[in-house]
Picture: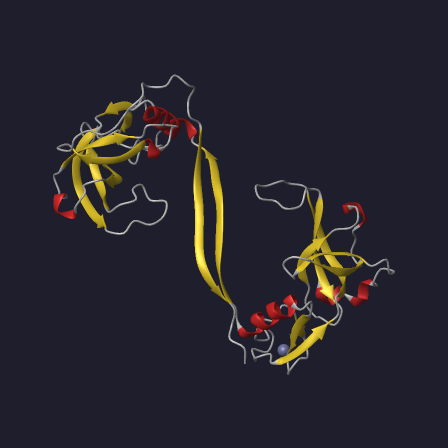
Length: 312
Ligand SMILES: [Zn+2]
């Protein structure tokens, strides 16, 4: 048997959200090299500020500035930083209680060596040269004994920071199951390879390896034609970053002839308002990747509802 296919996959997107009044003021302060905290009902100053008082659940009053120097309360050494972390070289994650605050904030400390780190170490903020209103406007903290290396510009006079963008990224190695591997190898040869359950006779594409109804392995391979029927569909009208097809376009569930389960694909080659349940379609192969680019209408009469009703 051929070995399973595997490939690195990467999922990434920018999570963009509004900050709300408290964090907006906090982030705007960072841009201006000021660290703000909130005084709670019990008199303690929280830095970063809370959005709702942990005791009374009330929003904070006017924020108060705390120091940009503080004391390490606790720390953990990061010998090999990961991509996207604050520093490229080894550093410490630390809880830092800033002067004037009663709570600690988490940030990176560029200590050079783990031997420098200790609870009680005095540290100060190293400001980023280009500040945009983000927690990363504090590039990191550094021991107060270090020679200051920052080149700060003067506080900006731009408007309040109201939005934040958090990049989200997941990298992993995907290993395809034997059935999925056969399916993918088939696509490269413009063949559509499904699997049939030996108990109920249902034909699954892409193959799942087991029948969800009977819980038995599906070992019989079945080659399906490249024609099928649209069972359901939606018209995509919303744009998003990285979109390859210009809206409006149709994403449909396509039931290949001989299959018992529909799979998702694009239906192009006609106006979105011509797509309907029962529309007969044929795969259009991608010249480059070898996979299916999309499905397009065949021009045949629509399939009768009863022929696909069971697969909705
Ligand atoms: Zn079955």
